[in-house]
Length: 541
Image (tube, one colour):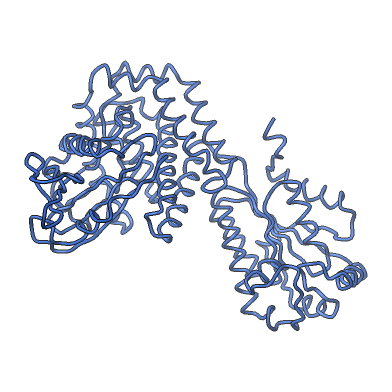
């Protein structure tokens, strides 16, 4: 997939107010993974990026012209008052200018689509975030879509796109193009769960897809029907815009697939109630009683599409770094949503290894990491990384001072939570190795697990004073550990430990650190197995 850059001179010209054939009230430059959009007040101008993403190819100037014209024609079906004309960016002696497509009067260097600018405050996604979308608006939208799909049947070519083999082509492309996102946007287990559900549904319901083709449910639809492409004026009908023009395969689909995009988006905004209104009103208006039989499949498909798009945007070097990381989080959230539609996924875990210095909690954490392949986040290592120290570099700071001051410790736990959260966000398991002396820290990590859908397990490793004394003496003699635990600090650390709350105690496993390694691991793995852990070998089989 090629990511080329738009001519900077063109971007500068469109970013200024002088090139436009009308006064510019205000200038705003927006980007998607395939377009630059310039909002000027009265008009909006859309410029296609010269990219090749596999499912679209905008590299050639002539292709960008053709797709601009297709976009104009197709979007006039639902938003005729918005889509005005395609214009040429031309080079003249005095510089770049915008000109009519039919008579550019100069060397054409780019093409743009001119649209009437809509009230940005009435975009449906913004209104959803503000809690200002109600059932009446969704009802009007459902009825509008039912009328649209009834008028856009498209004939034999369009119907062919709804055959099981063609639907499978789109689904497989999703997973082919997101395969490399494993470990970045999604855990391998979550990705496989979504893939297996999708392909399994297609295998098991081939006759259902054929039946929907025969019923005329496959249409020349919109292809990108989410709330960001819908405007809800205070008065009048909803405005649905920005349909897919670059790949008819994404537009020629079951109407249920189109509708599922918006339904999935409503779920993503936490408005399951509006999703139910949309589906109910659409079924009533369209008479499509079988829609519910394919809805979860298409909801899952659409969530993966959205995750894929944000994955592409995360990789776009033209975007600001903060925006790219925001897109990474969005991709992860959509993969999680897809897993929910798929009926779930293998459980993933946050294991917090807790206990005093010298009890063997870090040793047990390393054994667990070796057995499971889960990343091991050590507070000793993170604390020193934050201070610019090597993990094995010793610190002789007194208890509660310097590297171990309350502020440094709080910042260490915050860093551990961020790193653990990044892993859990993808649906992956993680081991957090720290003393967890304070109940507030335990509660913070339990909240993190709940927010990300992970199964938490707190493992308190304890040992007799004699075992702790011997281990710390050996550690001090060798000085090859990231831990700075010393015998004179044990009493102070023990005195600062808080008793677990009822919430913490319900998720706590106590392990004798003085036991042999196989016995400790057996107890730990037995608890994980009861919580639903599936070993790597079992998953592969």
